[in-house]
Image (tube, rainbow, N blue to C red; front, side, top):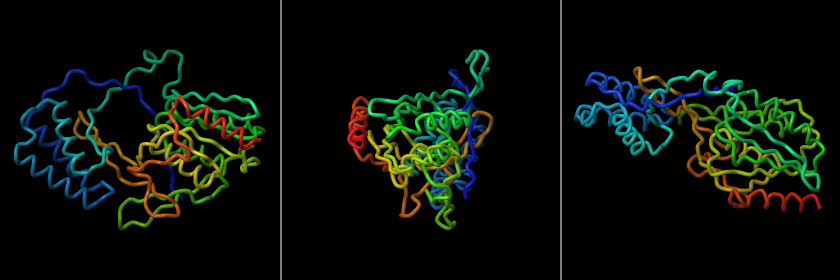
Length: 310
């Protein structure tokens, strides 16, 4: 079973005053980026091609038209995107932490999520997730909401305002609705490596006794990666109906690598894939069972839920 790690959110701000770089600094940044991509990128052939192109452009003085940090970032990312076709391979200026005391008075750092739940007409349970779910503190609150609605005839889970989520959190949310040790997805690191299975966890919630009830998930076009793992698993194995928009189509797992003192390189090192079929939802996204805008999705899901209850 794949060990899923949690990434904690940080309060950050961007540097608004671009710094001037020396030629030597530019050399180091581009060369280090090329080396890291070649050694880490999940598509080894493409990673080698990107490294060759970056080295060739560096020798051809492509990066020396400017020594400003922001312009180097833009120029390098243009190359990375055009060569890889992967918007998740990128160079970003490192951010600087801000004191949580000044930014979020009387609020725990990294706790920037909200879980609202209510019992609607016809005994339909409604759970709305909003904010960033990169903190495991959300797991206990999600369990509580689901347990409070354990007697509801059906559930609607609203992800339209849910932003980033860690794989650990999304994996737990998915496991709430599934039997333990169910094969729900795979991780592929490269074409030569064996697939690593992701299995559902054993979660102690009352929901387990209601696993046959319909679940409706409201999906946004901005839901990606961990949320897509959740919606794919619920759609295929959790008796769920997806209502809303087609999701973003990000199935990559990325590492953030420091490049010099000013930049971080985001390198996808693996891809999430379907458990029992070829390929993944990368680039295509998760297709809803019923298409609807954000304004229409809850109303449509409520109609479907009422029909299933009746």
